[in-house]
Image 1: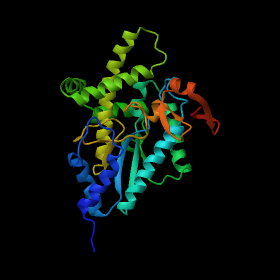
Image 2 (image 1 turned 180 degrees about the vertical axis):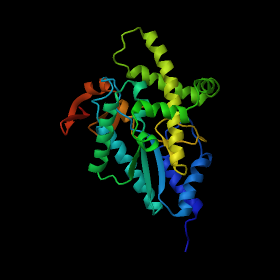
Image 3 (image 1 turned 90 degrees about the horizontal axis):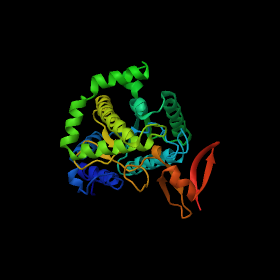
Image 4 (image 1 turned 135 degrees about the vertical axis):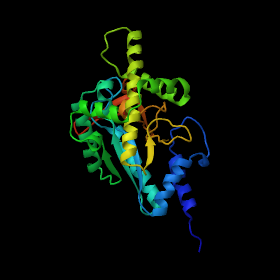
Amino acid sequence: MLTTTTTQLTAEILALLLRHRRGTDDAPPSAFTLQLDRLRAFVEADEPIVFTLPGFPCKSPNPAKVLGRLPDAGERLALRFLDALCTRIAEVHAPGARILICSDGHVFGDLIGVPDDHIDAYAAELRALIAAEKLDSFGTFDLRDVLGDASCDDKRSRLEAEYAPTLDQVRAEVRRDEQALRLYRGITRFLFEDTADFEGSRSALQRRCRERAYGVVRRSTAWGRGVERHHPDAVRLSIHPQPAGSPKFGIRLLDAPDIWTTPWHSCVVRHPDGRTELLPRARAEPLGTVIQRDGRPDHVLAR
């Protein structure tokens, strides 16, 4: 009787991930040695695979991009997709898989212009959504798990002090590394597009966003290091595009015209043929009707 080897099983699991990869290049499975090594360790131990996914921070503060402040169809469909991915993994690896949603809203709140109480409300509703949908594949992890119950400002300061690279280090990396430059430019663009109430000139806003982007990169690195320290064996996922060979594996949550688009920077459009996609609210609403769910705007139903 033929048996599946550890190497074959690990390759099957990676193949499931590669179907939904969010990357900056085309690469063969053999290029993902870091992910293969971590997956293999779980398979050899016959344990559930643990993934960490920084994301699901809060909704964009720009009302031209989102339908509201709380999770909606975008988050619901993204969570269902990730849960289904864990189910598919369990079909080939009996112990299954588990995803830790490492919410980073409080990590960046002051830099992206979202109050901490809005982030708390979003996080509470996200946990309620996971429970209501009976999505058993998820756990949650945030700054409280790393730094306790101090104030958000204090936790952000402590996170930077303990884990963040210096501003000079980040600037130098952006100058020398193409992937770091793409990330910096992508964050700058998001900050620019998410700003809804700036009263200065466009050039002044661009300068401000470029400086804030360095802060976001520093904290993103710090948060990644904090998550890694607490979950050193986990397979690291990212909602950002990642090149082959990166310690993080970029994963696409939903269809969007831009590989940077996320459910918290857009809204869901449902088309008559059943297809769904993510678009900014300003582009989505003219396509159809905003549908309510539980008394809140949930998605746009296209004509």
